[in-house]
Structures are given as C-alpha cells and as structure tokens.
Amino acid sequence: MRKILGNGITLRICDTKNSDSVCLLLKLSGGAAWESASNKGITHLVEHLCFRRSRNMTQREFYYKIERCGGYLRGATYRDCVIFEITVLKKHLSETVNILRGMFDENGWTYEDIRREKQVVLRQLENSGDITAKQLFYDFFCKSRAGECILGTQHKMLSFTKAEILNQKALLFNPCNAELIVTGNITSEDVQLVEAVFSNILSATKNCLHEITPSRFLSRTKKDFHDYEEDSDRSIIAISFDVDTETVSRLSAELLHCTLGQGLLSPFSMRLREELGILAEIESGCEFYNFGGIMYFIFEVCKNDSDVLKEELQKIFSEQKTKLDKYAFECAKASFSERELSVSELAYILAFNDDIVSHEEYMVRVNSLKYEDVCSAAKNILLPSNVTVNLYNL
Image (cartoon, rainbow, N blue to C red; front, side, top):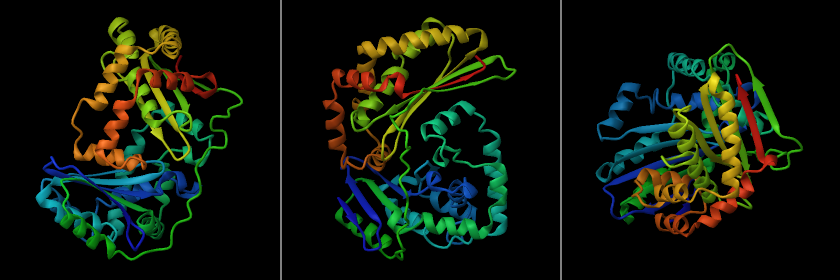
C-alpha cells in the first residue's frame, strides 16, 4: 500500500509473508544537493548527531534501546536524501517504530554533543582523500554545488552554530519531506500501529526544493578530462558515463554496470585481475537522480602498469559496446534474480525506485530483461559524448 498521512508523511508498506524480520526505512528528501555554499556538509552533520542523542536520551541509553531488541540503526547521507534504516524481528516492531518516530522530536543536543560529533566528521574528512571520485561527481553535476563533497570542508564544519544545525534538522525532518517504507511480514494491525505513531507528528510547511538537474546533462559540447600529478607509485584512471533514464531503464543500466565490473567473470575482473594481474579491486557504482544517472569505474594500479591499464580499458570498453560478454551478463542477472532478497534489500529497492511497489513487480522486471536489452543500454551509454575521465599520476 501507499498512503500519504494527514501531516504529509508518505507511508509505503510492502508485505513479505515468508520473513521473520521487518525493516523500517525512513527517507528524508533534502540533503547535500540542496545545501547553500555556506552550509555545505551540515546535513551530514545532522545525520551524525541523530546518533548522539535522541529524545534527550544519552547516546548510551539510545544505543541500548536499539540493540537490546537485536536491531542495528544505520544512517547515510546521499546527495538528494538522508536515510535511517533499522531491521529487527517482527516482535520488536512497536519498539522500532517508536525509535524512528523519536527522531522527529527535539533531540536535546548540547554544545558538547555538537563539539564531539564535529570531531568525528573532521576525522572522516581527513580520510576522504579520493580526489578522482570527487571530481567525477563534480563534473557530472556541471561543477555546481550539487556536485561538491557531501561532507563539506573542515572550515565550514567548525563554523556551524547550534542554531544553524537545529534549523537544518527542522528542515530535514519536515513530514512533507519524509517517506517511511516498511517491509516484512506486516499485518493490518501493524499498519494501524505505524499510522497511529507517525500521524501525530505536527505538519510543517513544505520545503521548496529546486530541481538539481545539471544544465549540461547529456548535452556536453566537449569531453571532461582532468589530469593530476603527485609523487606516488600508484596511478588511477576514473571513468564515468551519463545515463539518460528516458532512453535506458535504471535496471538495464545497473545490470550493465554489474556485467562490466562486478563478479568473477566480469570483463574487467577477468582481464585486468585474473589474466594480467595488475589490479586487485575495482571501485564502481551506479547512482540515479530525478533526471538521470551516473555509472562510474575507478581503477588503481602500480604506476609502472598505467600504460597497460589505459590500453586495456580502451579495448574492453570498445569490445563491450560492440558485443557484451554474454557469460558475464548471465552471472550479473543471476545476482539480481537467483537469490532471496532480505527485507532490508527490498526496502532500499522501494526507496530508490518510486515506480516499483512490490517484491513481485521487481522480480518480474528483472526476469524480463534480456541480453539484447542490456546490449542496447551499452550502445546508448558507452558513448564519447557521455564520458568523463580523470587521470591521477599517469
């Protein structure tokens, strides 16, 4: 079921009869893509602070409340949303609902809470030195603020005031921006419980969030290309492709990404790792927004192997655009379809695919994808006009 509560919260329930667990995933619109230049990183800090204190419970009390029912609360800040997810056995549903409901209330954050959590984020900033991945997203968003680092900068992190943080928290936890997804063995009584608990949150004026569509998306006049040099014995090639979701389905693009770079039989793995032995791991991913998506691959090798890597990547992309590896495709599709989805995995599928409403519908879509569909996706995506390249120490 899908229902908008009186205060604006969107409730989505997907019943999976054969599960002993339930997953509650709270998705809040907003986040890094809507931050101004002056408060970049503040949404991520708010997400962190939600684990520091809740409903005036200390961090220790809050963690005890979660973990004594066998749960694990996870939070993550994306460019266009923030999520909080917790999975527990069905018998703990009522406690879990109230844990997420409490996040909308006054947390009682103290100046000391804020100081300590800023230090945690500062340590993260110190360890987030992957300039190639940052540059790929910065280019994808046409060098706008939406493409800047989700964590912000050290200077901005230290400058955030308590008032600014509380204001951002109120904007983020606006019921009109909230979507609650519940998956698992859900009864009608469970639905009534969830509705009752979340309906009593006071409604607020809806945020006016502007579109984050890059003006140049899929209409580049030139290839984006960046080269970095440093005294290091490691080289990196980072490559990304725009994905036009009006011509290529998200699922086809995800399946293409997995076919190329995931699994033992993927072309990148077989050639670069198994045959040539120049690569240990491949960092890759697909991310989608309301206007399209980005598919990226990051390869790190010894500097002496950089020329070989460059030549091999050109060959592999050219070959796979012409004729996709059928064995790798079959394995990638099996990873989507020949496994049992957990309630948590299903919740994320629903959260990031608004047009999918059930596990059955998702499986129908996966199983309907043919080899020819993903070959067509490769021809539409693996184009020079879509590509961004970042070279590090080549």
